[in-house]
Image (tube, rainbow, N blue to C red):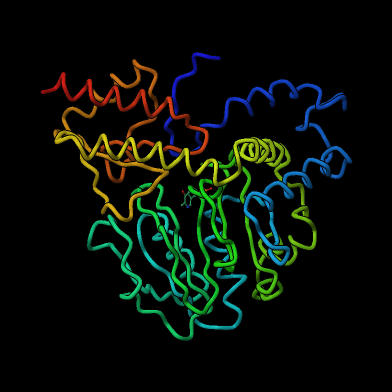
Length: 360
Ligand SMILES: *Cc1c(COP(=O)(O)O)cnc(C)c1O
Protein backbone atom coordinates (compact mmCIF):
# COMPACT_ATOMS: atom_id res chain seq x y z
CA UNK A 1 0.00 0.00 0.00
CA UNK A 2 2.85 2.41 0.66
CA UNK A 3 6.59 2.76 0.84
CA UNK A 4 6.74 4.16 4.34
CA UNK A 5 9.65 2.82 6.38
CA UNK A 6 9.01 0.57 9.36
CA UNK A 7 9.04 2.74 12.46
CA UNK A 8 10.33 1.16 15.68
CA UNK A 9 10.12 4.41 17.66
CA UNK A 10 9.54 4.17 21.42
CA UNK A 11 7.26 7.21 21.32
CA UNK A 12 5.65 9.12 19.84
CA UNK A 13 5.33 5.94 17.87
CA UNK A 14 3.82 4.31 14.81
CA UNK A 15 0.08 4.57 14.27
CA UNK A 16 -1.93 2.11 12.16
CA UNK A 17 -1.78 3.11 8.51
CA UNK A 18 -5.52 2.45 8.16
CA UNK A 19 -6.15 5.03 10.88
CA UNK A 20 -3.87 7.61 9.29
CA UNK A 21 -5.64 7.15 5.97
CA UNK A 22 -9.01 7.62 7.61
CA UNK A 23 -7.75 10.77 9.33
CA UNK A 24 -6.61 12.07 5.96
CA UNK A 25 -9.96 11.34 4.35
CA UNK A 26 -11.83 13.11 7.11
CA UNK A 27 -9.32 15.90 7.69
CA UNK A 28 -10.92 18.81 5.82
CA UNK A 29 -14.56 17.82 6.15
CA UNK A 30 -15.45 15.52 9.00
CA UNK A 31 -18.47 13.52 7.80
CA UNK A 32 -20.27 16.40 6.12
CA UNK A 33 -19.79 18.84 9.00
CA UNK A 34 -17.81 21.15 6.71
CA UNK A 35 -14.89 21.34 9.12
CA UNK A 36 -12.02 19.37 10.57
CA UNK A 37 -12.35 17.76 14.00
CA UNK A 38 -9.56 20.19 14.93
CA UNK A 39 -11.87 23.11 14.21
CA UNK A 40 -14.91 21.86 16.08
CA UNK A 41 -16.26 22.84 19.48
CA UNK A 42 -15.75 20.16 22.05
CA UNK A 43 -19.39 20.79 23.00
CA UNK A 44 -20.68 20.23 19.45
CA UNK A 45 -22.93 17.22 18.81
CA UNK A 46 -20.31 15.85 16.38
CA UNK A 47 -17.53 15.92 18.94
CA UNK A 48 -19.70 14.64 21.78
CA UNK A 49 -20.49 11.66 19.59
CA UNK A 50 -16.77 11.11 18.86
CA UNK A 51 -15.94 11.33 22.55
CA UNK A 52 -18.70 9.02 23.72
CA UNK A 53 -17.96 6.42 21.04
CA UNK A 54 -14.27 6.44 21.98
CA UNK A 55 -15.08 5.95 25.64
CA UNK A 56 -17.52 3.12 24.89
CA UNK A 57 -15.01 1.39 22.61
CA UNK A 58 -12.25 1.74 25.21
CA UNK A 59 -14.52 0.30 27.89
CA UNK A 60 -15.44 -2.61 25.63
CA UNK A 61 -11.80 -3.31 24.70
CA UNK A 62 -10.69 -3.33 28.32
CA UNK A 63 -13.80 -5.02 29.66
CA UNK A 64 -13.80 -2.27 32.29
CA UNK A 65 -16.79 -2.54 34.66
CA UNK A 66 -19.13 0.44 35.13
CA UNK A 67 -17.58 1.32 38.49
CA UNK A 68 -14.39 2.39 36.70
CA UNK A 69 -14.23 5.88 35.20
CA UNK A 70 -12.36 6.42 31.96
CA UNK A 71 -10.78 9.87 31.76
CA UNK A 72 -9.33 11.51 28.64
CA UNK A 73 -6.86 14.05 30.00
CA UNK A 74 -3.81 16.11 29.09
CA UNK A 75 -0.37 16.49 30.63
CA UNK A 76 1.12 13.11 29.80
CA UNK A 77 2.02 10.31 32.16
CA UNK A 78 4.49 12.67 33.83
CA UNK A 79 1.65 14.83 35.14
CA UNK A 80 0.10 11.68 36.61
CA UNK A 81 3.28 11.18 38.65
CA UNK A 82 1.99 14.16 40.69
CA UNK A 83 -1.75 13.62 40.27
CA UNK A 84 -1.60 10.11 41.74
CA UNK A 85 -0.27 11.09 45.20
CA UNK A 86 -2.36 14.28 45.26
CA UNK A 87 -5.55 12.28 44.69
CA UNK A 88 -4.81 9.06 46.53
CA UNK A 89 -2.68 9.83 49.58
CA UNK A 90 -5.95 10.61 51.38
CA UNK A 91 -4.58 11.86 54.68
CA UNK A 92 -2.11 9.01 55.00
CA UNK A 93 1.63 9.64 55.21
CA UNK A 94 3.16 7.09 52.92
CA UNK A 95 2.80 5.30 49.58
CA UNK A 96 4.62 2.19 48.38
CA UNK A 97 6.54 2.33 45.10
CA UNK A 98 8.45 -0.37 43.26
CA UNK A 99 11.46 0.77 41.28
CA UNK A 100 12.16 -1.16 38.09
CA UNK A 101 13.70 1.42 35.75
CA UNK A 102 13.82 5.01 34.55
CA UNK A 103 10.08 5.70 34.56
CA UNK A 104 9.35 4.30 38.01
CA UNK A 105 12.36 6.24 39.30
CA UNK A 106 10.84 9.44 37.93
CA UNK A 107 7.45 8.58 39.44
CA UNK A 108 9.11 8.06 42.83
CA UNK A 109 10.95 11.36 42.64
CA UNK A 110 7.82 13.32 41.80
CA UNK A 111 5.65 11.54 44.40
CA UNK A 112 8.25 12.48 47.01
CA UNK A 113 7.15 16.10 46.62
CA UNK A 114 3.68 15.19 47.94
CA UNK A 115 4.10 12.26 50.33
CA UNK A 116 6.60 9.94 51.92
CA UNK A 117 7.63 7.24 49.50
CA UNK A 118 8.53 3.77 50.67
CA UNK A 119 10.56 2.10 47.93
CA UNK A 120 9.25 -1.39 48.63
CA UNK A 121 11.61 -3.04 46.15
CA UNK A 122 14.18 -1.97 43.59
CA UNK A 123 16.24 -3.68 40.92
CA UNK A 124 18.68 -0.76 40.73
CA UNK A 125 21.57 -2.96 41.89
CA UNK A 126 20.87 -5.34 38.98
CA UNK A 127 20.87 -2.49 36.48
CA UNK A 128 17.07 -2.62 36.23
CA UNK A 129 17.13 -5.81 34.18
CA UNK A 130 14.34 -7.57 36.12
CA UNK A 131 11.24 -7.28 38.31
CA UNK A 132 12.11 -7.85 41.99
CA UNK A 133 10.30 -11.04 43.15
CA UNK A 134 7.02 -10.21 44.92
CA UNK A 135 7.95 -12.12 48.08
CA UNK A 136 10.94 -9.82 48.62
CA UNK A 137 8.87 -6.60 48.54
CA UNK A 138 8.84 -4.69 51.83
CA UNK A 139 5.42 -3.05 51.80
CA UNK A 140 4.47 -0.49 54.43
CA UNK A 141 1.29 -1.53 56.22
CA UNK A 142 0.26 2.15 56.44
CA UNK A 143 0.64 2.84 52.71
CA UNK A 144 -2.24 4.50 50.87
CA UNK A 145 -1.50 2.68 47.62
CA UNK A 146 1.16 0.71 45.74
CA UNK A 147 2.60 2.10 42.51
CA UNK A 148 4.31 0.12 39.76
CA UNK A 149 5.39 0.82 36.20
CA UNK A 150 3.90 -2.12 34.28
CA UNK A 151 6.31 -1.81 31.38
CA UNK A 152 9.60 0.07 31.58
CA UNK A 153 9.82 1.54 28.10
CA UNK A 154 13.54 2.26 28.28
CA UNK A 155 14.82 -0.86 30.03
CA UNK A 156 12.39 -3.29 28.37
CA UNK A 157 11.25 -4.89 31.64
CA UNK A 158 7.58 -5.84 32.03
CA UNK A 159 5.33 -7.27 34.73
CA UNK A 160 3.69 -10.46 33.48
CA UNK A 161 1.56 -10.81 36.60
CA UNK A 162 0.57 -8.37 39.30
CA UNK A 163 0.76 -8.65 43.09
CA UNK A 164 -2.34 -8.71 45.25
CA UNK A 165 -1.39 -6.41 48.09
CA UNK A 166 -4.55 -5.25 49.87
CA UNK A 167 -4.21 -1.56 48.93
CA UNK A 168 -5.13 0.03 45.58
CA UNK A 169 -2.64 -1.00 42.92
CA UNK A 170 -1.69 1.97 40.71
CA UNK A 171 0.05 1.24 37.42
CA UNK A 172 1.77 3.36 34.79
CA UNK A 173 0.88 1.35 31.67
CA UNK A 174 1.95 4.06 29.21
CA UNK A 175 3.82 1.71 26.91
CA UNK A 176 1.61 -1.34 27.07
CA UNK A 177 -2.03 -0.42 27.64
CA UNK A 178 -4.15 -2.09 24.91
CA UNK A 179 -1.33 -4.42 23.87
CA UNK A 180 -2.95 -7.41 25.60
CA UNK A 181 -5.97 -8.20 27.78
CA UNK A 182 -5.74 -7.13 31.41
CA UNK A 183 -8.07 -7.61 34.34
CA UNK A 184 -8.89 -3.99 35.15
CA UNK A 185 -10.35 -5.03 38.51
CA UNK A 186 -6.84 -5.86 39.76
CA UNK A 187 -6.10 -2.13 39.72
CA UNK A 188 -7.36 0.88 41.60
CA UNK A 189 -5.96 3.17 38.94
CA UNK A 190 -4.21 2.84 35.58
CA UNK A 191 -2.73 5.69 33.58
CA UNK A 192 -1.07 5.90 30.20
CA UNK A 193 0.20 8.59 27.90
CA UNK A 194 -1.31 7.89 24.48
CA UNK A 195 1.72 8.39 22.26
CA UNK A 196 3.23 4.94 22.71
CA UNK A 197 0.45 2.53 21.90
CA UNK A 198 -2.83 4.42 21.75
CA UNK A 199 -2.80 7.55 19.64
CA UNK A 200 -1.12 10.93 19.21
CA UNK A 201 0.75 12.75 21.96
CA UNK A 202 -1.36 15.13 24.01
CA UNK A 203 -3.86 12.61 25.35
CA UNK A 204 -3.47 10.76 28.64
CA UNK A 205 -5.86 8.00 29.70
CA UNK A 206 -6.75 7.47 33.34
CA UNK A 207 -8.84 4.47 34.37
CA UNK A 208 -9.87 4.84 37.97
CA UNK A 209 -12.19 3.00 40.34
CA UNK A 210 -14.93 5.32 41.53
CA UNK A 211 -14.19 4.55 45.20
CA UNK A 212 -10.93 6.47 44.75
CA UNK A 213 -12.67 9.65 43.61
CA UNK A 214 -13.31 12.58 45.92
CA UNK A 215 -10.30 12.01 48.19
CA UNK A 216 -7.93 14.57 46.68
CA UNK A 217 -5.83 16.73 48.98
CA UNK A 218 -7.30 20.23 49.40
CA UNK A 219 -4.50 21.92 47.46
CA UNK A 220 -4.88 19.64 44.41
CA UNK A 221 -5.20 21.72 41.24
CA UNK A 222 -8.76 21.26 39.96
CA UNK A 223 -7.40 20.14 36.59
CA UNK A 224 -5.62 17.24 38.32
CA UNK A 225 -8.53 16.23 40.54
CA UNK A 226 -9.98 12.98 39.17
CA UNK A 227 -13.37 13.62 40.76
CA UNK A 228 -13.62 17.02 39.06
CA UNK A 229 -12.63 15.55 35.70
CA UNK A 230 -14.94 12.55 36.07
CA UNK A 231 -17.88 14.82 36.87
CA UNK A 232 -17.12 16.99 33.85
CA UNK A 233 -16.73 14.06 31.45
CA UNK A 234 -13.02 14.98 31.07
CA UNK A 235 -14.14 18.40 29.85
CA UNK A 236 -13.45 20.70 32.78
CA UNK A 237 -11.56 22.66 30.18
CA UNK A 238 -10.96 22.10 26.46
CA UNK A 239 -9.84 18.50 26.09
CA UNK A 240 -7.27 17.32 23.50
CA UNK A 241 -10.00 16.90 20.89
CA UNK A 242 -7.98 15.78 17.89
CA UNK A 243 -5.92 13.26 19.84
CA UNK A 244 -9.13 11.93 21.43
CA UNK A 245 -10.66 11.50 17.96
CA UNK A 246 -7.59 9.66 16.59
CA UNK A 247 -7.44 7.41 19.66
CA UNK A 248 -11.10 6.60 19.02
CA UNK A 249 -10.20 5.46 15.50
CA UNK A 250 -7.42 3.30 16.97
CA UNK A 251 -9.95 1.70 19.34
CA UNK A 252 -12.20 0.83 16.37
CA UNK A 253 -9.18 -0.57 14.50
CA UNK A 254 -8.34 -2.76 17.50
CA UNK A 255 -11.91 -4.02 17.77
CA UNK A 256 -11.83 -4.94 14.06
CA UNK A 257 -8.75 -7.10 14.74
CA UNK A 258 -10.43 -9.12 17.46
CA UNK A 259 -9.87 -6.77 20.38
CA UNK A 260 -7.07 -7.16 22.87
CA UNK A 261 -6.89 -10.95 22.59
CA UNK A 262 -6.42 -10.57 18.84
CA UNK A 263 -3.71 -7.96 19.10
CA UNK A 264 -1.99 -9.86 21.95
CA UNK A 265 -1.55 -12.92 19.74
CA UNK A 266 0.12 -10.75 17.10
CA UNK A 267 2.27 -8.98 19.67
CA UNK A 268 3.45 -12.26 21.21
CA UNK A 269 4.38 -13.59 17.79
CA UNK A 270 6.30 -10.42 16.94
CA UNK A 271 8.25 -10.25 20.19
CA UNK A 272 8.85 -14.02 20.18
CA UNK A 273 10.50 -13.86 16.77
CA UNK A 274 12.74 -10.97 17.71
CA UNK A 275 13.86 -12.48 21.04
CA UNK A 276 14.50 -15.78 19.25
CA UNK A 277 16.74 -14.01 16.79
CA UNK A 278 18.65 -12.38 19.66
CA UNK A 279 18.89 -15.55 21.76
CA UNK A 280 20.02 -17.85 18.95
CA UNK A 281 22.88 -15.52 18.05
CA UNK A 282 26.19 -14.93 19.77
CA UNK A 283 26.33 -11.51 18.19
CA UNK A 284 23.20 -9.95 19.70
CA UNK A 285 22.42 -9.90 23.38
CA UNK A 286 19.37 -9.07 25.50
CA UNK A 287 20.23 -7.47 28.84
CA UNK A 288 16.87 -8.41 30.43
CA UNK A 289 16.16 -11.51 32.55
CA UNK A 290 14.09 -13.79 30.33
CA UNK A 291 10.96 -14.04 32.51
CA UNK A 292 10.61 -10.27 32.75
CA UNK A 293 11.17 -9.27 29.14
CA UNK A 294 8.87 -6.74 27.58
CA UNK A 295 6.69 -7.65 24.62
CA UNK A 296 6.59 -3.99 23.60
CA UNK A 297 10.14 -2.64 23.92
CA UNK A 298 13.00 -4.94 23.04
CA UNK A 299 16.45 -3.59 23.90
CA UNK A 300 19.43 -5.47 22.56
CA UNK A 301 23.14 -4.88 22.21
CA UNK A 302 25.71 -5.81 19.59
CA UNK A 303 28.74 -7.84 20.61
CA UNK A 304 30.93 -4.90 19.60
CA UNK A 305 29.44 -1.48 20.34
CA UNK A 306 31.78 0.04 17.76
CA UNK A 307 29.46 -1.50 15.15
CA UNK A 308 26.38 0.33 16.51
CA UNK A 309 26.59 3.24 14.08
CA UNK A 310 27.04 0.94 11.07
CA UNK A 311 24.12 -1.21 12.23
CA UNK A 312 21.84 1.82 12.48
CA UNK A 313 22.96 3.21 9.13
CA UNK A 314 22.39 -0.12 7.37
CA UNK A 315 19.00 -0.47 9.04
CA UNK A 316 17.93 2.94 7.85
CA UNK A 317 18.97 2.09 4.30
CA UNK A 318 16.59 -0.87 4.48
CA UNK A 319 13.70 1.23 5.77
CA UNK A 320 14.06 0.23 9.43
CA UNK A 321 13.99 3.42 11.48
CA UNK A 322 14.31 4.54 15.10
CA UNK A 323 16.23 1.53 16.41
CA UNK A 324 18.76 3.49 18.48
CA UNK A 325 18.56 2.62 22.17
CA UNK A 326 17.75 5.29 24.74
CA UNK A 327 20.70 7.55 25.43
CA UNK A 328 20.80 6.33 29.04
CA UNK A 329 21.39 2.66 28.12
CA UNK A 330 22.87 2.66 24.60
CA UNK A 331 22.64 -0.25 22.18
CA UNK A 332 19.45 -0.82 20.22
CA UNK A 333 15.79 -0.84 21.08
CA UNK A 334 12.98 -2.05 18.85
CA UNK A 335 9.54 -0.96 20.01
CA UNK A 336 6.90 -3.38 18.74
CA UNK A 337 3.70 -1.54 19.58
CA UNK A 338 0.33 -2.59 18.16
CA UNK A 339 0.76 -0.57 14.97
CA UNK A 340 4.10 -2.16 14.08
CA UNK A 341 3.21 -4.91 11.59
CA UNK A 342 4.62 -8.44 11.61
CA UNK A 343 6.33 -7.60 8.31
CA UNK A 344 8.44 -5.06 10.21
CA UNK A 345 9.79 -7.78 12.49
CA UNK A 346 10.46 -10.06 9.52
CA UNK A 347 12.45 -7.28 7.86
CA UNK A 348 14.33 -6.50 11.07
CA UNK A 349 15.26 -10.13 11.77
CA UNK A 350 16.42 -10.61 8.17
CA UNK A 351 18.55 -7.51 8.45
CA UNK A 352 20.02 -8.61 11.80
CA UNK A 353 21.01 -11.97 10.32
CA UNK A 354 22.60 -10.32 7.29
CA UNK A 355 24.45 -7.78 9.39
CA UNK A 356 25.79 -10.49 11.69
CA UNK A 357 27.03 -12.53 8.73
CA UNK A 358 28.69 -9.55 7.09
CA UNK A 359 30.38 -8.55 10.34
CA UNK A 360 31.80 -11.97 11.11
C1 LIG B 1 6.79 7.75 27.93
C2 LIG B 1 6.51 7.31 29.30
C3 LIG B 1 6.23 8.22 30.33
C4 LIG B 1 6.24 9.72 30.13
O1 LIG B 1 5.16 10.05 29.31
P1 LIG B 1 4.82 11.57 28.96
O2 LIG B 1 3.51 11.42 28.27
O3 LIG B 1 5.92 12.08 28.08
O4 LIG B 1 4.73 12.33 30.22
C5 LIG B 1 5.98 7.72 31.59
N1 LIG B 1 5.97 6.41 31.83
C6 LIG B 1 6.22 5.50 30.86
C7 LIG B 1 6.21 4.04 31.20
C8 LIG B 1 6.51 5.93 29.57
O5 LIG B 1 6.76 5.03 28.61
